[in-house]
Amino acid sequence: MKTVTILIPCYNEEASLPRLYDALTDLMKQQPDYYWEIMLINDGSKDHTLQIIKDIQQRDARFGYVSLSRNFGKEAAMLAGFDHAKGDCVVIMDADLQHPPKAIPLMLKEWEAGYEDVYAKRTDRGKEPWLRRVLTMIYYRMLQKVSNIDILQNVGDFRLLDRKCIEALRQLREAQRYTKGMYCWIGFRKKEILFEQGDRLEGVSSFNFCRLLRLSIEGI
Image (cartoon, rainbow, N blue to C red; front, top):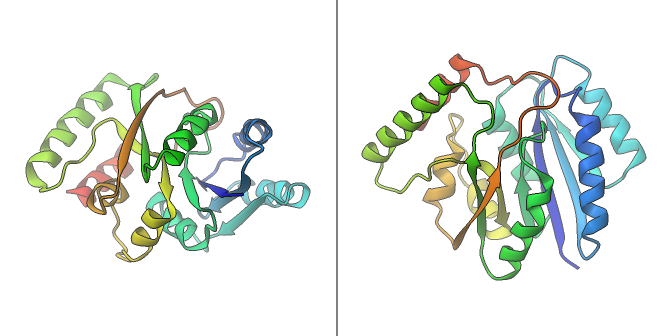
């Protein structure tokens, strides 16, 4: 039986974690043909995120965690997850449930069909401010002009990666990371699925304008 790791970076997600736990346990009940490993990466949270993660792990052994010594950012948190994930494939998703777990069975279907990078493309960006949408569109156009690889638009970190992809990404150890570009750079057989991005139900996003600008500059 194959093992599926779900990798979830967490920063100040104490309000989201109970809903996330319920959604993932429902998913695992509906997909009994896989072993499941849920890898929660505590990225130096300042609230009770780590304690809630520990409580979840105590009552459900399918959930494990890595706790970073401070807030290094989502890119570094994902690399920590790549280093510890044991699955035959790894699904990366956010803790706030804007990435719907109900899309994961479709990812698994495409993976079983032979695709090694099954990425989820947004059909709707939810209640995102219009200025952010416009700036995002301009940014990706500019990124395409300066890059010699095809950077996918409206595609984030929500995706399934085969173990081959994970091993390739683990070899890229730079500290200033732009993983969305790395997914494209490493190659492998890719397949698109579509999903509607939900709105954050609990808590507040840690990606403010300054952090997004910094990530954009690093991407370029």
